[in-house]
Length: 303
Image (cartoon, rainbow, N blue to C red; front, side, top):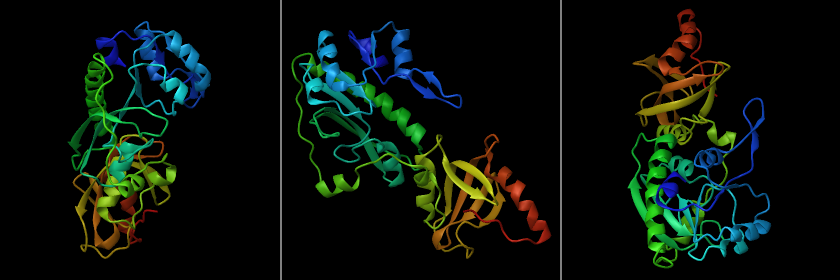
């Protein structure tokens, strides 16, 4: 929105209605609404999008710019702007369509993603592509860093697409790609089960799961009855180094807590957030549970 405000005359801003949020479940406006009001913009919060088409038409918009709205726009509403409805999607469409492209691409351990600006149609992320840009994913890049980086690029590419539209409907082309791969990467809303670390996976998969949910809401596990979130981890050894069962603590060293994974590999938990405590290093958390070793008790296990 900020990019559009700087470059264009914004006729109105559409966002989701205020909803309860936080522990107290107090009704709060969306961040988009707060930013729009700070700029003195007209804010609309429709609940029924088909009926909203008439209201949108009174604004006489040339184009729609859509980002993370979370609802499929009906055909009648998409027909309102003569230049089209431009959507920002953080993936290389037709790959990773749907609601969770960033988390899903990280869960898959992909080395590349991108940003696509496309003209919306009646399908879910199926419209013609206007601009698309590829970018590598760094091995240690997490959801938060990738989100912020692609958001900045998405804003720049959206302005590029809108500039093309000034001279008429921009050149666009149908999405092209392997249909089977597009179906395989179709994303879905993620659950708490997706956030749970699975120690019977290989180390790289475990670390990718941590990256996909960092810094928020955090990948989750338990050890010795202690629930915690892990927000940073790395692969120490991919395979064949330890014989302990997956999920068994190997040791605490260098600020890290080392844990056995599938195939004899080792994962280092570097930054964790125990329940009802602040963030700490993996080693600091480890010291609170490994003191039992002095009494010859069993190695603690993750679940």
